[in-house]
Length: 353
Image 1 (cartoon, rainbow, N blue to C red):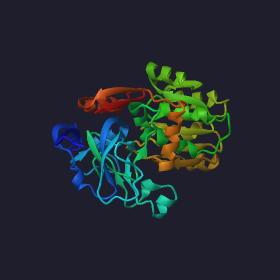
Image 2: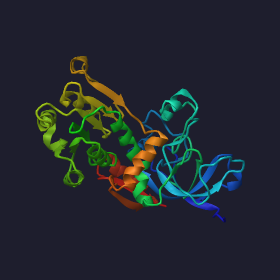
Image 3: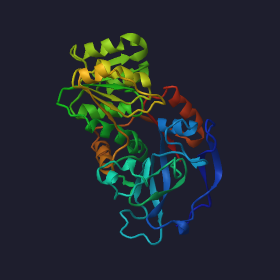
Image 4: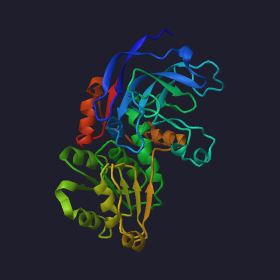
């Protein structure tokens, strides 16, 4: 297959500055691929709030610069490195790239399903170049096969946002009919969480701000809606009252907001579970009297295993969970990140390469 010599990419070069859109960046030569590496022609790349942290360098994990950003991508394999044996993918296959580019799959963390903690892991957009490019290098053993029945743009956000909230919800020991509060419910992660939660038997209390996000959450099955700006200091009491006057059984924090974390222990009912998947650049404080007195369970959850990803995408294949998204060009990346940072994106934004 004949490949072009150059491509368009979005590269972060200095923290706090917009990504540079380069139009003459070299396309990797297939002859230079290592065994088990593959070259993927990216069709669509998702934009995530984590990309804001990558740009600003305010995350605990900082990208090595310069670095091509992006960690959600769907495209087709155009080359596989010489010396690859027992490759699970072939040239022409449609595959997905995730935040976790590669893990050893042998260490204790990998074997226990915590590949994100693998000490030899590589991360797209952080330690290796990511999906904001027309061509990206990935690892054949770690890309996710994309079923033929789903649209490339529609499935792209499931490779990070979808699997992240799906894995977080799986951590909650619940019964059908239990209430769950989802701060950030109208965002990229949150609106998918609303749908997964409904299909898992939860009754959903959506928390976010703005009419567009309210309409989105209610249309996706949320029973209750609270605008945190309108509720203000009454939000905790409002959420408790909405869940039979006892508070929800669980909270999945998808918002990158420290306030969302500090409020949740106060509105959860005794024995409740808090799962955090949003990552605000702040600390989390909770009175021990609340934690111990209410016998709360608190989990932090990041991404998910390869099997979690397959399961999360299967909901899309079955039509049970659908991503609300808009498609924009690579050149709009900086304005997209600004909108995300300001909380002005309902659903998800996908870049067409």
